[in-house]
Length: 553
Image (cartoon, rainbow, N blue to C red; front, top):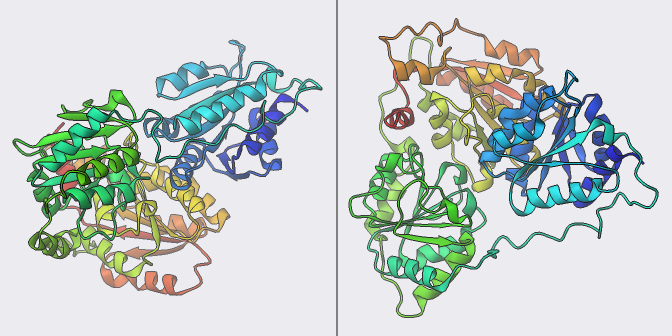
């Protein structure tokens, strides 16, 4: 058995179930060995798409996913997706063939590239060490939630494994990961006591959960009940508190007027696994005068990184929430906090963006993106998985399309690259085949990623692709304004429905709500082919979230 084959088989035995990539000569054998070992491989049309598919699959499945790429150019093609995964602490292994001879046209400094984008790096160095090195990379990705580039030198890949070396990892499979509800470093009693005291004295507490608290729903709900807190999430954790009458949905630029008002009126804000960055706190404007701020995070370096905090607790969100709840219950039960019948009624009546009055921009062959999205929210099945690309349009699907829980929304926006939304939807759809996948894209991102429409069709995914088509890079149009020369960011009208049809999609062009009859027919039909909606949207001004975002630029 050669090293490349042993690496693929070892990863399959470690539990890798899903890999994505584009196969070339350098990663051919390791990819085939993964498949022989029982993993599924999805061939993307571009390495950038494959990287984001793997990222989304890992986020929505809780598993370590694998990206496999050719040496040199295969890795550089994938770098944007790898950067997004690294910034998001996605447990992802990148199997990258490597040319180590500087004279090779495929040679680049692959460990240097990994380090530059925030990923870890491991190199398979010899037949005798190959399997333990890969097992170490797998453990690093899974247990520390890191994106790890595994460099597979071509000359090492082709060497035979010694007769006495098993393709299994040394000592058998890596030990199972610690329970997500148990912190590797239990929080100290003083820190927990400080946070409990802060919440016990709060009159209007708000708990905000981020990516690092997606596993802590039950514990955070219990803590909120104990201290009378309202609940919100960062965008990436949207849906976590779905169904709670005290949920404010998303905090930050996407927050509805009522949510923003209630959060900014809080006297205590506690972020759990949440960076409390400029997006989640609207550049700090959601922190009211005199409000006290606390933050809970596994990474001590994250505490206070984006804004000063009065109390910082190092620990797992679920474990800390449970300890604080117990501490609150010991002396005296907490009072009602922020919860009153009047607040409950306001949340039920006025929280959703679709319930906020607006002047419809539709007409002259264009549909208002809010009106479009509200209609789609009513048309599409509630058990859905929404993936959103970046751009001026992104707030509309992010906030006007409801989601059933935290596994109903996949938001690859840590790097804010446009063009990732379609691949995100593919990876998430494979992780959650029980949900209708909905990819919400702008026309710029849709055309960047158009090659992956073929991947949707090949996989037979019953996906809905909604393109908010304003024939422009809308964020730049509205950021720089009509007085600027916008010729570089405005384009002639493109028939994206015809592009979708060419890839084998059912396709409809929507200029008014009446044109959504074709969507109803698709939903009620057999959904044998994916659906692309080319929505010609009106955009006389920038979206509300964009105006918020650019206040800080």
